[in-house]
Image (cartoon, rainbow, N blue to C red; front, side, top):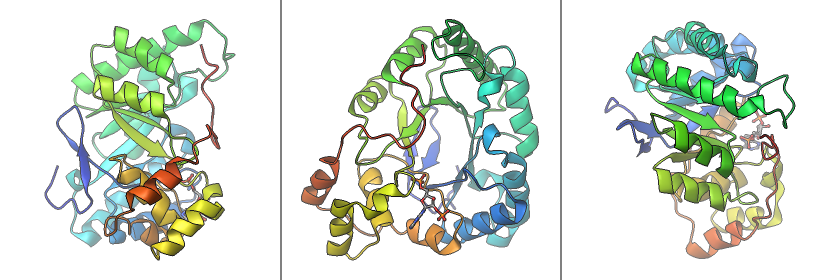
Length: 290
Ligand code: A2P
């Protein structure tokens, strides 16, 4: 990774650094919207971008980066691109799906490619073909990793059981597990499984889809340290070494969300926020997928 990386980073088990801060792009679809968000993010120091085949913005993200990197004196190697396999391509179509992501992004390689979820679109959560399909997807990701097209591979929305299953059969240990994580969903078991296997635990929806921004405890902590609720929610995660991917389409919020490396939350405030843990999920729930 280039030294021009301006955002603090974590070391993956591949030996590569991944920025602690990345822009979430879920629901950013229109080309102009993607361009504006990527522009604001690069200006604010973001060096990672999180897309997915199902977000239908891989092509727009690739185009925006090709256009905007020179404006900031950056090259392809200065940014870290994450994307994910479409759940409809889980199993025997995984090669096609991953190659499609590579061609849509058109950035030469993908820094981190994830199995988006343990299930297969179109199959019931109880369908016994699910484990075989995700194992097949993983083997295909391993193959593309071997070819250098996917620099790192990982999974998203896996439960502790899915992680243990993968660890029994994989040739390559996943580099990252990306899941919903915020004070109301502290994911203690998953974090300890990741620690045990040397997998980087990465957060999405650190703001609880925006719903935690008005939580009274979060608001009070924010007021005490003269920060925004979004900044303290993101700080709570990165202070634990957890990389975050806040999504915003608004340039001011994109800029504001990046301001979390210049302050520290006290142990008391960290503990008050962690005490909100109640298993609340605002996003998809994979716990029933066999
Ligand atoms: P918007 O795109 O209009 O900024 P999460 O990352 O937890 O899924 O949260 C994303 C949601 O939070 C989006 O709806 C986004 O809306 C909103 N959001 C992101 N950053 C902020 C912020 N700093 N203040 C208020 N809302 C925010």
